[in-house]
Image (cartoon, helix red, strand yellow):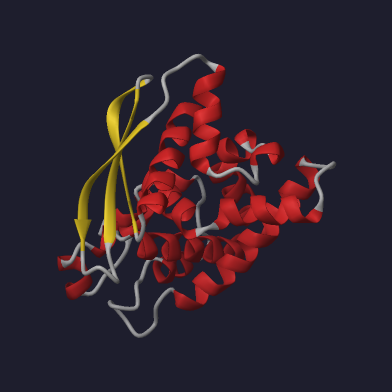
Length: 223
């Protein structure tokens, strides 16, 4: 595990009481006193800050649209991606079992630790510090949200994006099916001409895996 001092530089926040951060970076596999309570707190703070930002940013959107947009922003998949962006896995303290199984890369562990860090910042510096951190992490995603797209699934949005630019439609290919018939996992590769790489997704159905691929491609295209 790398130093907390380095992590503070990465996230742009210096703790007055570093024990808050140390606890936020401690997984339950490593100690009885761990980050689960901070995760609980951080989840609430995150929801409040994102709700407030959406309310201010989208004055003409109704409650249903705001709720769906918030859900898309604070879901575990998004949080794990943000955690990876700041290299959070390198700083998490894990038990030997989780360490050997690659827990520092596991999406659920990363997402939980990200929320715990938010909780730690809130306790250490208050709501203003937590708000500043959250908005700095979500700035690109908040800038790219489109209320008109909230009810469209990623495959539909990707198709419309490409068609509007006279680009060929994506090609989805199932490359692996694992598990028994009642509990299968599908691995799908996706390719679009404008991105010179294969994008992969996994899910309990082909459709879900394809939707995951489409969302990843959209995220790349919007950067």
